[in-house]
Image (cartoon, rainbow, N blue to C red; front, side):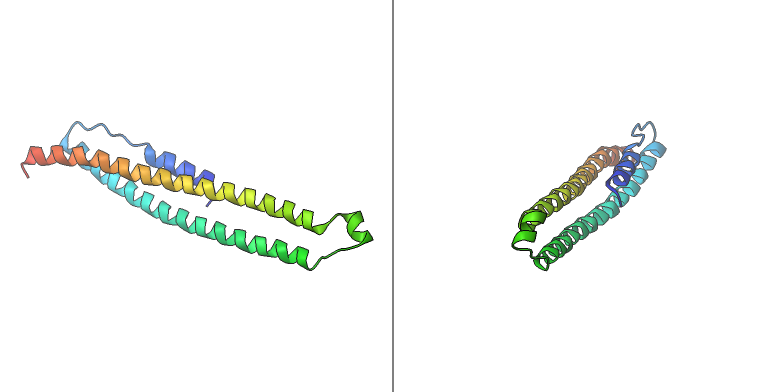
Length: 138
């Protein structure tokens, strides 16, 4: 999934009416929070999978670049005209590393946001559950 899609889903999950005026509203809120929490847990699993996939793809791409330049050793006059393959290799690896780090860091940031939302949903449920227990005497 693309990071933008994750952001859109998180925005949809965050938009929830937390005002409670009755017991029915309390039950509705608890149900919605539980559903959204389970969605967040699934999203977190998907993000962890995407992080692993991005790291794996980075290693595969890095190996492919190294292989490309190891078989394409130029020396002498042609190496001077076309440029040294070592500098091209370094430039490609730096570019790949930069793109990969950015993507992985974005995914990790999403994971931290989801962890924070799960904690916040738990913090929202506690007072609602407590007030329902107080009303019913359980």
